[in-house]
Length: 288
Image (cartoon, rainbow, N blue to C red):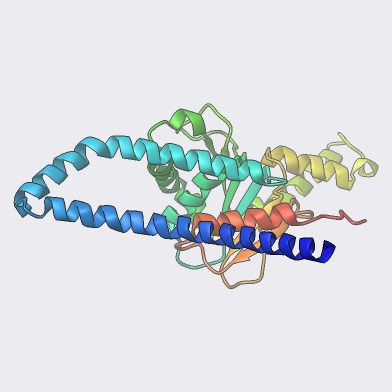
């Protein structure tokens, strides 16, 4: 009798699993069929209408609904990207975008800056070995504002930011009140900053403000951090075939996680978020 009950129980379990699989398959098929059904139904209903009249009506409807759709789409994207950032076990406070390619795409870099802002990154550094982004920082600034409007909608108040320029670290005349900070860097901000800090220490010793015994690594560290006024990057995404940091902030990347992507051109949100996921999953031992 127990054997019979066991067989009946296994049969019932098999039936339940078959039912679940069938329901899941039907749900997927119904979504596809539903879309096709409505497309065909609408096509059949609108077929008698003259093409020119249909185009006029469609154009009017498109114009009236563009604003609503853009607003809803931007709101949906904001919610999704913010949710993605919250879902990560850890999110970098400062992310560096290092481009090791000859041809630069301002639009693609601007997209990545906006995506970083949307998921909750506070500081974004943009760097290329020739300093072209820094020389044309106003162009990059305009592109960031444009893509911010395109991707996040017209409400700029949520993701205002300030753009810091080499040396001064003063905000450029552009949006401003809130936190995401974009810094455009060049090789001058790397080794050159170390040289300047070393000269400052030497001049201080020469003027007898400090003695040579006072000079230490920690003192140099303080000087370099004062000049940059931003935290060390926890993650750097490098674009291009060159396996090198290309002089990107050599003092500040001792504990930085590097992720390489083939190119910054046509990079997608999924590519960038994949890099954030890799950073989130890595366990840094910090020398232990």
